[in-house]
Length: 103
Image (cartoon, rainbow, N blue to C red; front, side):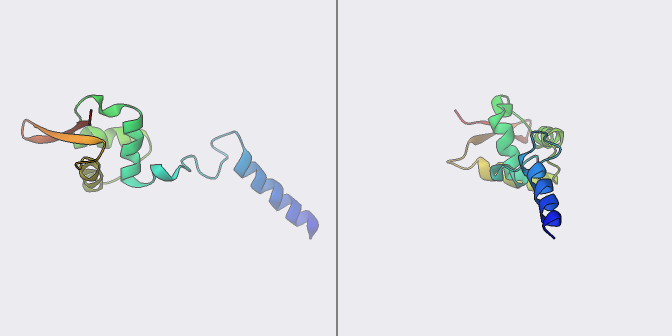
């Protein structure tokens, strides 16, 4: 019985304390990077919004970072993050809404 617990404990310790990102419980354990809003926050932290970006460009960048969401979900996250006090602001170019980091 004790040997069984020791093997389970060793397996858990390897999963939790491993330096290999593939072996950890979650490669994205950071709670702030959860959901579409978290994915956009990751892009903001990577200075992705130095240039004006459309929703399609943001969706492609999120997909490259393993955030796969519908365009409508990404649009909602962008709208919420571009509120008056948010880190992004919006503009219109050629009739389309674009997003850029607030200065």
